[in-house]
Image 1 (cartoon, helix red, strand yellow):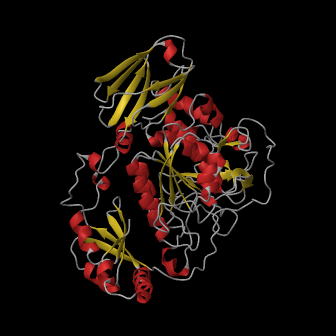
Image 2: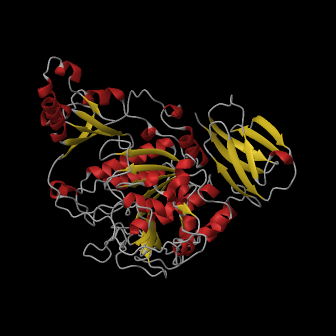
Length: 562
């Protein structure tokens, strides 16, 4: 992602003695890192090389399909930035960090003189300076840890869910699991601070064995490696993706995942909000359906104190991360965020982006459903009810980075528990608008008829939410049958597990989105084992979305990718 405007290094180094080589490279690196960041917004996207009429040039088939299913048009905000504008900035920049197309902006490192030149260009709307250095004066605490007491190797609750039984049953996610919805085919993006040892942890082995970790990026160190730096992301991830029956099973263990490190635990800086915004855009373009973010911002280090959130700016649409969160929701994504852990201190309120208009802010309750003292309170300063809903956040089960089961406290954990549940509900209703799914979950909650600033609408019952949506979308879900499909999107073949199949031939039909039948086959009873069907559609099929129909009734949306 890093771009530079320095003279090519091989030209600079030609003729240098080895002893000077390291010194010169270090000097160049320090020159770049010492320069301040500048957030540059453009006036428009005129003369753009891309068009909303051809979104496949800048969005994945899956991202386009999400919009199509929810009747969301591709708009100018989806377009990449105008290249003539970005080229002009890049020519003066020491480093281009990233583009932010929703806000029509880019983040770069510049000298002050270059920033002065840019301010004179007619297509520049605004330039905001963000200091690149400065001592951290803020003691960051992402959650209220409670990892001193580990759960025994044989959990106290020996049910199928093991250590997570209470937190899963509290929101009735088991009802969706029993119907066959475990997050299959749903893409969930996690933005956090680090995912230490996730790739080697037995609780996540199935994610890797089945190829469901699709993308990673670390914004703090500009690398794809996310498996270090901090344990917070690994623990929050476990509440969604852990999958060892009778030990711990998360709320959406069969989902597909994108992991982003957007949070720098060494300091508290405004650039972390912009990191999140870029991760959100990237996740959208890949095709994510749900975001889970156990982060929140109110007070920054002294060098960035000008950006501190006041209650007045906690109005749902002012902070950079709130703006980006609302933009993501406008693309059909379910944006789930922790409410924050300041309920018991002087701030008292939620943290941004939990204040955002279209974000599902998740508060924290105890094992018995009573609100915790630390859970961030609402409303936001515009009077919008916050938090929206609650899940278990005190003594929530987590998997530590060494594979040991433990507990931890914070809305950092109620958030992923809830996000995984939303992913399962999204899998059941792929064409339901995202905000209708949010409404259904809120309607199912125990304080829906009498919401308040502590609980919001309360603790959801995802079984009731399913029933509510089922009445509105009777043909969007599996009726008598239960199904799992993997992988979706597919490349060459797919597997389906459908409960309730009879020992009879199975007729399979595949249609494109215009309704044209592009493939059909019949499977005799002796070609499938139990309820498992393996299909290999023709290799010549074009990339994109299809409808699979089985025995003339059951329909499933599939996407073919490269």
